[in-house]
Image (cartoon, rainbow, N blue to C red; front, side, top):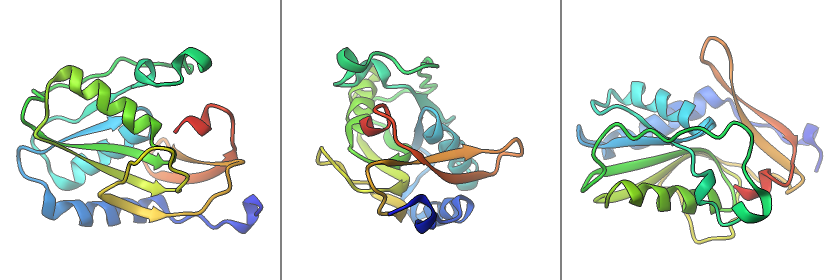
Length: 176
């Protein structure tokens, strides 16, 4: 399957789908945590659309990955920022593209360093299958079948609009 044969949905429409799915399940005490980078962008948008009170958190789980020793750090590792108390909190972990589940596992491990949440649910703009761990999103914008040699990348324009693009996969992309 070539890049030209795969039609990606409009990311802005998928944000609306996620917002509608999530709205009945959030309370004023629900907090969003976006995984750097695309998941953080998405969490910011969902936070605004859902009108949540607690500030949005960001997480870079690079140091918690099970392949850290083999692959080392990706460029641009950022500091995680969780500006609320995680203990007994309902959390929604937000990622742009759900793939193998390894990033989600690492993110959950890091979240527990901040405390023990009451629950953690997962929201993903795109689920591309290919799971290596038993991870499933409770909120999903779209499920898209993409060959392993391609990656789905969330992009953000200067005006904040989100879009999806297909790119050739790298070894780092397989980590997701």
